[in-house]
Every structure is written in C-alpha cells, then in structure tokens.
Image 1 (tube, rainbow, N blue to C red):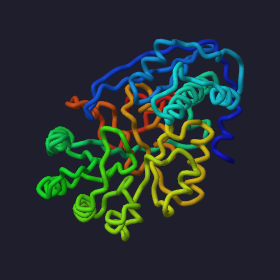
Image 2: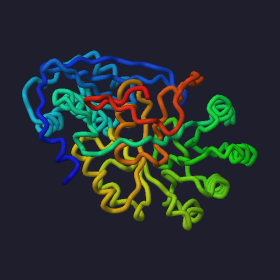
Image 3: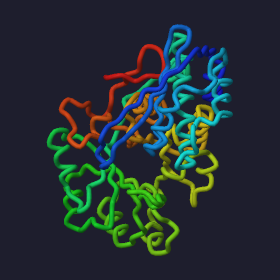
Image 4: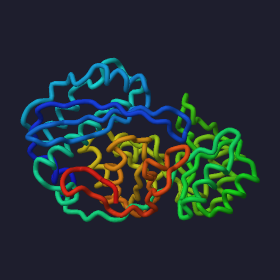
Length: 352
C-alpha cells in the first residue's frame, strides 16, 4: 500500500484559520521570520509552519491575514488539492521555490488537524513505529573562519556531530583543527546556490583539501560539472549527496549519476502526496535519505523530526533541536539521537 493512501481519505473539517508571526536571530547571521498557520475545526487545531526565507514574503502574508477560502468538509486529499489550486501569496514571491514551502505549510497543518480530529497520531495512521533520530548541527564558521562555533558547542555538548559549509577561506590549519575534533559527519559545498549569502564558487583546491581531510564525510551539493572540481570527485560518487536540487522524484532521476543518499526536505518537496511518493520511491530504489532543517522557529522543526523518526532515523539528519541554531546554544538541549517525542494525537513532536 502506498504511503499516501494511508492518509488521503482522512476526514477533515475546517472552520477557520489564523496566522502567527515568529522571529529570531539565528547562527547563520540573519534575522529569521516564519509564520505558523493554525487551522481550526470541530474543536481541534492543526499547525504548520511557513519557512519561506524572504522576510518580505513573510510580512506580506501576515499583513494580508487569513484570506483564503478554506472552510468546509473534505477528505485530507481533497483539501490538499484545494490548497494546490490556490495562489497563497498576496504578491508574487521573491523565489519560485517559496510556493512549494507555503503549500507544505497548509498541507502539514491539515495533516495535523485531520489526525487530531481522528484521534490518532501520524505513526499509527501510517502503521510505522518512530525510532530515535540521529542529528547533526549545521554551521558556517564565519569570515574569517574560526573554530570557535565548533569548540564552544563541544565544550557543552561533547557528543555533537556537525555538518559544515566549507569556504575558500578554509586554510590547512583550520581543516586540521576540524579533523582533530572527530565531529564532522558531512560537508555542504553549496555549489548550486546562486545570488545568496552562502554561495561558494567551484574551488578545486578547497575540494581537494576537504575530500582528503574528511574521507568518511558525506559530500553534499558539490560541483560535478566544472572540470577541475569534477576531477577531484571522480572517485567519490558513493559519498556525494544532494539537497538543493531535490524538489521531486523527477529531480532525483535527473541527477548526473544515481545517488546513494538524498536530502528530503518536506517543505521543498512541497506537498503531502509528493512527499509520501518520494519516500516510497527512495525505498524502492535503495536510495538513502536524511532530513534537512530550514531554521524553523515553530512546529516545523518537530514535524520534520517526526518524519525522520519514521522514514530515516539513523542517517545524519540536519534536524538538530532549534536551540542549537542560536548564536549561544543554551544548556540542557537534548543529545543525539533524539528519543521519540510524538504527541498522542496529530502531527506534532514535543520535548522528549
């Protein structure tokens, strides 16, 4: 039975919805805005989080208010189809991919509400058991780069593992210090980002240093087109993973070679049926998966952790508890792996 078939027929009653704005300063050096959508009906409430990155898009959504015609009785599948038919942006978004993010916001809120109205949790509806979730902490090391973001976290949380963004400013001494920590599980070359604050141009010297220094690390989104960087990676394909280009099964099939692992972000896939189909596709084709975070400030991070617990719990999920995204992570954060923390009903993941 396909994964989505377990969910599509769930009854759903929607009476109203509201928007809640959230804001925080996060460790990548920017002000993060997000919006929580609260769907209400039949005495229950379901929540989903809009993780569109551009603050102007978040502000426009919040200022417009709950203007979509969502009230009615549906199956979950019918409601998701309605969402897909609507323009959810008061003004055109800064980036086309933001339409996928917002679509997932309403799908995830509807899934939460439908499950709450049915009185069951997601894992029971799917017939799966949640497992502890392994996670890594995703960090950039600043410019000029410094070991401090790593060392300060390891002082407090000695078992942490990291996913790092190498830049051309990484010198041999810094790389040696990172190797000495023994805590780097994956590196993200971000070669597929253009026009953002995290762009990293193809740099064969950087690639050679990193590939050789971290022989067991996953290599995310490298440049395999430019001849010089492709040459560095020609014997490394089994540890190359993909994140930024993955919005669909078609994107997985269009990769330059069959992947061993892909990053499945629910919001980037952009819909409940598409997400379920992508999980099924990866399982059928022997492709590993891990989850990725997007600096969620509300329920979105827990929902991604919940999905990871059901579909890819033991991989290097970039889904550390949100406190690790703070410039100075507070004491008392949970260690990896995260114990299952599923709410008794709905699509929520609380504190362990």
